[in-house]
Image 1: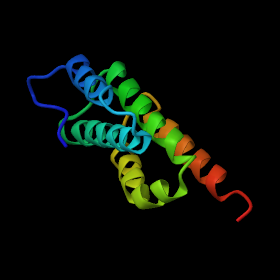
Image 2 (image 1 turned 45 degrees about the horizontal axis):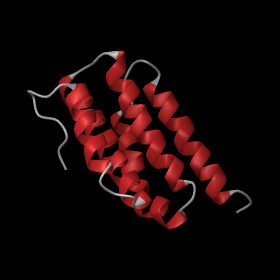
Image 3 (image 1 turned 45 degrees about the vertical axis):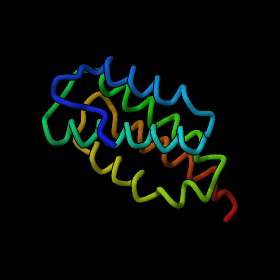
Amino acid sequence: MIFWKRSFSLSECKAVLKDYLGRTTDKRFIALMNLAFAREAAHLSRDLGDFESPFYTALENAAEKCLDYAKTDVEFFEAHEDEFDDLLDSASNFGYGVQYSLENMLDEVRDELYEGN
């Protein structure tokens, strides 16, 4: 899945995702698409350099939507845990507190899913 092309702006990419996700009610699929969006954003920034704050806000919002769903579906989380870790690894050098926010979100999901285990 590729959301970005060099000629698309962040708002255009978010509009495409919103339109696409507006065509389904499958929560698992919506979570997966948000994960793909966040990972692509992270890879794009890792490969091309720093962007402005709205870019990282969009990345964090997509990750949060996906991880909110993951809290309710342990099988989904376990099936995509490597992708969540890849997202975190890709964000390791970002500014704006992105890595910290993603780590907190991921830790919260793990705590909720595996509490008491």
